[in-house]
Image (cartoon, rainbow, N blue to C red; front, side, top):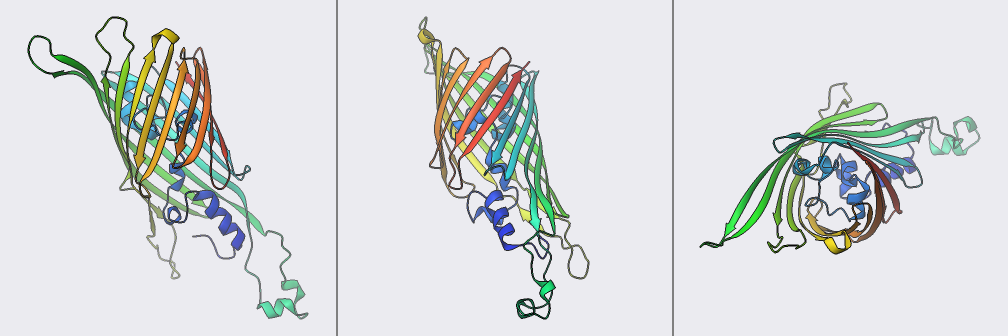
Length: 347
């Protein structure tokens, strides 16, 4: 779909920027969605399907929207590969009562000022010789174009609270359970030079949180969370390309479905006013890939995080003051390290 005459190095540049996970990923559309959103989640190695409880749950697991304490807006910006590409995400989420949570997200990856070269005249022999020196390439671009991918996502989650009884008799063990389900509808747009592709898709998610807190007085709260999600159900991007006869080509790119499932354990340490969360996750978008992460929170004000995203080291920190929270993440890549910054405001 890249018009004839684009230089080879430009094609290679596009491949490296848009498909950072390797050649297999380059076969499919919507690869920019696999970048993930939110510095907190990325600093934890992307192990977030069982943790998602903030505005970024729109992306990671829509079921987590039902655990929001209040309205939240989150903004993420990433300058990638020495500013050759920019990744931005905006998420707005809010609880609406009766265990429901709603969310709206916008995600964009943009690569601007890509050089374009027109097809040279004549043969290589003509250009090398003295007959037509004006046909030789000057090395200067004949123009520029951009590659922009965007996603608009609308999500909802619904939580159900109930008790699960273990054992019988007069003193059964009671496990408080919180179970949530969620779904997202997404619209994709991809503009490459003069061509445009559009598509729609669905994400589904579920989240189960079990309280493991002892009934003893003064015991610290403990939770075990199980998360499940499937992204890009039936998602394709249809392009407005035409055949050589000028007829619509009906060309479509498939967006690969991604099954994610994981668990997280959270322990409150009341004596130190702190909380520790450990998480692990597996996704199979391009084969089984593992994600691990952890977070230490002090007084819900200072945060330290670390993890491994498919073998790549991740780390980060955060600070929360009043209604605002700023998170930073370092994410390692084979093609170059990435620094991510997110700002969230709770209302």
